Length: 224
Image (tube, rainbow, N blue to C red; front, side, top):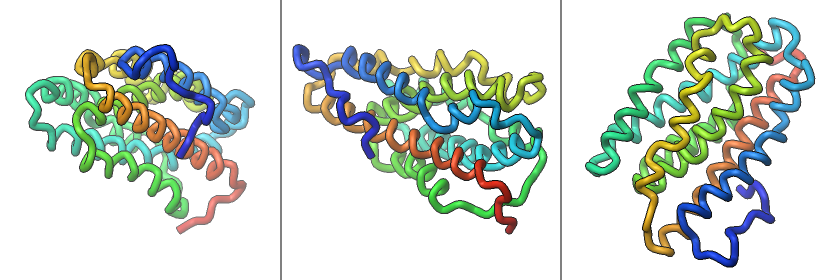
């Protein structure tokens, strides 16, 4: 899934960590235009009912994120990556349960599209190398979190009552940079692979947030 067809690595330089980081800035700028953030900026979530519906669907992603982090950490046996993966998991552990305990429960119909998009990240932990997992989970997912919570906190938790949102006010910036030093001085062919995974990761996450926006716009979600 492509995010920006006109995003290419800079032709004057070979693929490198620098190119990955520079491209990430372009992906982040594009991500800010997501439908979900347009709704948040527009005041759409001005009622408790709408905010609660959003949290119900966002819980799906939060649950998958925890599973993905657990799987990534459990399967890592590379001594260069293990300490970083363990630290990242420890700092994220339990945020799904934190959210689940704080929000009202609304029975909405399970959405197979949202489930499939979330499951993409989980499934990639079974097939990608640790270098590739850093691109997916840190350079992409944690970068999206920084942007997401900057919009979500004022729109969904304007009175700062939810501990889940408080926990993400600053830590995601550090997580975005975790493990990047291990992506230095790799073969050109490996950077080409990482650039492709970076593009796919941003594309899937763009679609994931857009799908949540579509679901919360339904006036009366179908009950189970």
